Structures are given as C-alpha cells and as structure tokens.
Length: 541
Image (cartoon, rainbow, N blue to C red):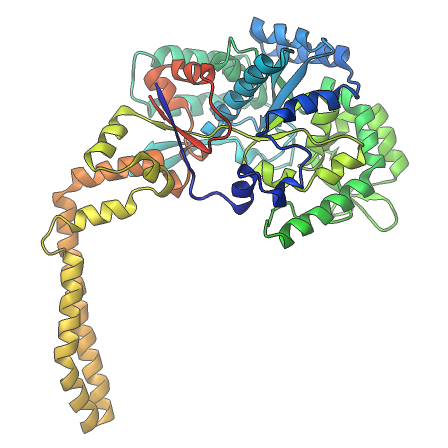
C-alpha cells in the first residue's frame, strides 16, 4: 500500500480558510486544531470539569456487549474510568454495509488521532464513534451505490418507512434485508474473499434486530483490534445518563438558540454561507410522539410546540419529561455536539467538511453551558486507487490528483478528438464558418430584393448547418464505436476516482474492495499514521 498526499481544489472557502489557520474563521472556534499546544491546553481545560465516568463506562459496556464487541473495546471502556483519560469522538448515521466510504475514513481518523495524541500526551486517549441512531431519515441510509461502468447504480432496500421514527427503533425486515444482501452479492465478482465476506455479513444481519445493530456489528468486524468504542445515540440507557443534560439544554434554550442564530448570520456576512437555517425560537430538541420524531420550537408564549401544534408542552412539562422519560427526547444538529461534550471528556471532535461548517456557529451554544467547544479536527480524506486504474492513468498520462479533483471527461473528449486529423469538431466548425462566409453575399442580395427572401436565405443557411451537424454527429459516433475500448477506459477512471463528479468517498461503499482484497487494506490504513494537516490522500491498493 502506498499513501500519497494531494491538495483538494474544490473545497469551500470556509474549509480553505480553516485549514490555512485564517483568524477570520478560527475566531468562531475555541482551539486551533493544527497547533501542537492545543491538546495540552485542552487537557488543562478538561481538568476543571467533572464527568460521570463510572456510569458512562457501565452504560458503554452494556451497549457494546449487545453487539459482541471485541476485547480491545472493553479494555478501552475500562480505561475511561481513569480520571486522566480523554476521548477522540466523531459520528455518522448507521448506513447499510457502513454506507459511503467516508464513514470508514472517519473511524480511521478517530483511531489514528487517538493513537497519535496518546503517544504525545502519555494519557489514555480512547477512540469513540457516535452512531446517530436517533436520526429519522431512513432514506439517507437505506441504499448503497456500486460502480457499473460508465456509471453507478443505486441498490436500495425495499423496506418502506412512513413515520419519522428514529433509525434505532426501526426493526429489520427479515425478508427484504436478506433479499437485499443476496442481490448485492450477485453483483460482485467472486473472489477468494467472497464466501467468507458473505458469511460474515449474513451472520451480522442474523444477529441484528435493527439496522443500527447491523451497522455496529460490521464495524466491529472491520476494526476488531483497534479498541474503538461504539455508542448508539438513541439507546435507552444512554438517555438515562442524558436526563440532567436535557434539563440544562431546556433551561439554556434562549441563549443557545439566539446565539447560534446570531453566529449563523455573522458567518454569512463574513462570506461563509452555512446551511443550518436556524431561527431564534428553535428549541433544537425533538419530542417522540406516536412513533414520530417531532422538532420543537419555542413560541411567543414560552410553550414548546411541534410545527403542526400536534404537541404543545410547557417548560415545566418538558423538564418533567427530561427527568422521568428522557427516552422521549432527542437532539438535533445543534444540541448533539453539546450532548457529546457533556457526556464525554473529549480531547477532540473529528468532523467532515459539512460538520465543521455548522460547528462554526455553535460557539455561543457551548458558552451558554459554560464549557468550551473541543478542538474540531477535519477527518482524514482518502481516494483508493486500484492497480488497473493506476495503469490506465499512466497509459493516458493523467495525473492521479487531477483525476480525483476534476475527473477525466475533458481528457476523454480531447483524446477522441485527436483520433482524426484534423479533429472532426474543429473541421466541422471551420466548414460552418466557410459556408457562412460564402453564403453571406447570397443572403445580402436576397434581403435587398425583398425582406421575405432574406428570411428564406437565413433558413437555407440553417439547413446547410443542419446537414453539417448531422454528418459531424455520425462521424463522432463512428469514432466512438471504433475506439469503444479506449473510451470505456476513460469511463473507468472517471467512475472510480470522480463518481458523480465528486469525491469517491462520498459515493462508493467499501464492499467491492473488501470483496476484492479482503479487509486487510483497511487494517493497514488504520495502522498508518497520517498527518491531519494534509487535505487528501491517494491510497494505492
């Protein structure tokens, strides 16, 4: 395996400035993530706070046992009871078969940063992955994409959801889930790894009542020795721990909501448009009612209500729910980071570009709770380059970084154009220009004779152009047929490295690679030590 850093050309202005340590954006955060002193300072700040470590460790032990976690995970949970221990935390939704590759990349990032900082700080640093099981958008996780050159194909689970129920509460449909797995494996080329991979995934599925359970068990299969600790954000036992923190969020709602709204507006004025879409009256909490997850707002009378007023609660009622039935509450994108910070002694949060964007508006929310936002470290970003793709890049002299950033559509067109001399498109354009020049005197005379003849002459020219267009199209198609093999190779490069005109990690699921190479490449990458200062890495497998 070879790992080479490259730059990304299509980052947002916010991410460019964040990575380049621009004060303009870093003022919205409490720490500079790329400075060595940051993590020593963070340790000192955490020493002034207290955490319910014993109950947290007991809860995590219970949750992870439900998924038959490996021994390394239990060892790390026990280390959490050490008053000096901290965590590196990040999270994602429970995508089928892990979802897009960026989920795996995020877990690798959490593990690597935890290991790097433990070596530097000489204290226990534990990798924690927060499964966003409380999220209710099943359509975001119920499918994967597989490459089918020259395009991709979506494979969606047929199980339907009508209500906005948390994913953790959605029971697996045995028939649809097994049919989906079998259909996916029918698309894969059989290799020496296929049978074991199929048996492992089926075993995880059979033991999993929900898709969150399925996700967790697969993660433990991929990261068996790294000690990553998983937590389901919607687990009832975790909700018990969160009870007092929900009360804090309810009591501090005006400061949290108004502060985040103000920061979002300031960010937009500074040239950093973010997509939180907050309002001063947002409660940033969900209430679970009749299998629906209802987002609350604070109205003018101080009551907490759903959008359709299907739920209306007083502050006293909501506080009582937090005390006695915390499982009826859940966090949104604003309060989830706060809840993580209240539960865990977090040395750092690992986030993707979208997460860092909305975290930039959250500083006043942390201030409202009289705590600091943890250092927010951009996750590691990888593109995997297989040997056959590397050979094609070399054959057509296309730099890997260029293919990742821009794709090869233009190179494909230029290559095809070069297969005729002169190129068909250029030759056709020159002929159009020549015909228009030769035809002009005829059009001029026709207009001088009578206006309608001028119109007829223009139409005559358009007919001539149409015939040229037709011949150009036929010649181009003939060239495409003649060089179909070579063009399919360009398509292979583009689909592999720039699918959907974006980064590979946002589209492809790791399953085809694991089927081809086994899970060893993930283990090797996890054991590497990558600099978080680099924007992106090419991983040659």
